[in-house]
Length: 378
Image (tube, rainbow, N blue to C red; front, side):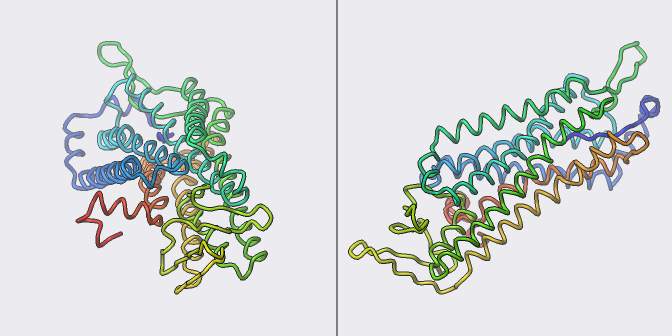
């Protein structure tokens, strides 16, 4: 999201052209611009790869993956529309693109970042219901429901982002022609209510929801293991939902009484040497597991990565937002504000990696799309 910091417009208006050119040619600024540009390109490439894989791979045409695809689209918009302008802003050290572009950039920035965070909460809710209410939810987990969910997330993102943008303070000075020019493009409010509204709607409420849901997912997994301690297939069910987020009536049939798979296992259950087969003649399950606990460890790792990446990337930024806008005597340097902003942008690069790299279907799709560079990596 856009920075929230204070600069003196009088200092910006007296900047000498030679000083600007000298600062632009400094090795440190060139290195910084190249590094940020690499992050923007990498974010664009990875999210584009995820979107393409979902669109062209029939096996990935699942309602659960619609949320993953929408998340990738949101993060792609951050990489294409937000990051490049931020790089220009950091390199120039002043806003040079005019007031209209400033308003548009702030709107896209705040809306897309908020929508990305809300997608993470929606995915957590989807996986929680897929585990705790699998029988009923498998009937509700439809393409139409996924589309409605995505539309609702975007609508909610606009509602959360719009009021603070409309009533924000702007920084501008008069040029030699008497026209007012925007020298800084950032968000600042006179009222604490706008800060509380935007930060809680965009981050703190989704954060609380994500923490509660993943905690309940963990407890649900523990409950299932305690009820069916000898059934490794139950563990695989919970782990598969955590790793891939895919569970439908086509994948698995559950008994309402025992909450245990009775007919089919997840497709491609051979990860880490695991294989589960069902014999149609007797209905008995034959389970062969060469590496016990592997899927559970990977599921726990995925859970830790999801929560860790989200908190590390966004919590510092939103803590700074609350402190700077509520504490009148508090301020932050431009360098620190830019660092925290790009730490949040980094989450758009991490998201497609975390939510797809542990999924065998995604890995196979990536290998088909990039057979040369991915064959030895994925």
